[in-house]
Structure formats: C-alpha cells, structure tokens
Image (cartoon, rainbow, N blue to C red; front, side, top):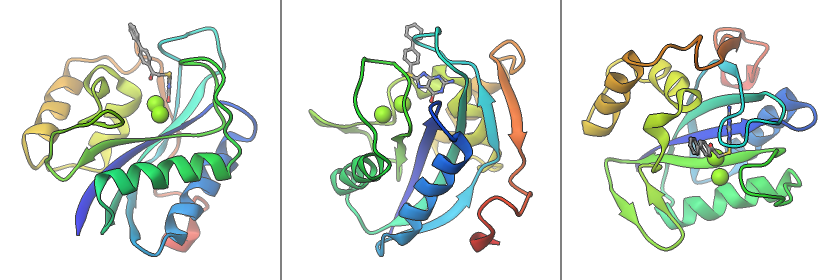
Length: 173
Ligand code: X6L
Ligand code: MG
Ligand code: MG
C-alpha cells in the first residue's frame, strides 16, 4: 500500500460541490482508500492572480496504484468533472496534484514528486500540515518548517469550512 497526499483546488462554478464530487469519485476507485481530508481553505490565487479565489484541500489516500497510475486517476477525475485546459495557471473547475508519494522522489517526463513548488505555496502547506500533525520523513518535516515562516494572513489563506464539520463528506464520518 502506498501513502499519497493530493492537493485539490477549484475556482470555477460551485466550488464546494466540485470538491465533494472529486472526493466521491476518488472514493469510488476500488484501489483507493480515502483516509483523511483537511479542512477547506479559501485562498487568493497565486501564479496568475487576476482570477477568482480558490477553495483548496489536501487529501491523504492509501492506494495500490503506482505513481504513474495515480497520475492517470487524477487526470480521469479532472476529466469527469469536465475540466477543459485553458491557459497555464488559469481558472479551473478542478485540479488534482500529487504532492507526495510515499517518501519517493519521482522525476519522469509527466510527473515530478514531491510537487516542485509545494513548499512555496501556503494553499498547499496549510491543509497538508493540518492533516499531518506529526510529520514523518524529510519531506513533511520540511513542509512543517517552511510553514512556520509563512504568515497565513499575508498569504491570503482563510479557513472556509472545518473538517470537523460533518456536513462535508458525511460518508467518511
Ligand atoms: C512566481 C512565479 C511566484 C510563479 C509564484 C505559483 C505559479 C503557483 C503557479 C508562481 C506560481 C502556481 C492554484 C492557485 C494555481 C490553487 C490558489 C500554481 C498554478 N493553482 N492559487 N494558482 N490555489 N490559491 O490551487 O499553483 S495555478
Ligand atoms: Mg495545481
Ligand atoms: Mg495540476
């Protein structure tokens, strides 16, 4: 079994429903076990900033899929929600990125893990740290250390719905 952290973001349409739909699709994959879901954070767009605020979460899953199979699963979920590729860093219905895959460093043409810019992005680090209170391994330790140096208010990260709120994904509670 492989331990995998995914970052999920959305800033088009019914953002909350998009997150729920993506999680339901992940739960529906027979080789994926959704173990933990962070709170939902509303985050100012970075990269290309002239677009709507995002909702971002991090999800911890266990899966027998290889990293390249998991990448295909993420892309399938994006397609099932009707994602169309517009411009780089532009608005999207849903985006699923593999942050961590076990403690591996993966460098292929289609996949870089750990996600190359995860340590610079508060919208990734805040929910990741929330669901990894005891950081195990070099990558999570670095994530925790980096976050201490970021000011979440300056970074435009707002708690939008706490994960203890059982209206979010009641099937997991
Ligand atoms: C300099 C140059 C500084 C580029 C930052 C950061 C580029 C992030 C792209 C950057 C730079 C990205 C989300 C988002 C995107 C999201 C929020 C990206 C790719 N995805 N903003 N921007 N949440 N809040 O999920 O992450 S586009
Ligand atoms: Mg992304
Ligand atoms: Mg992506």
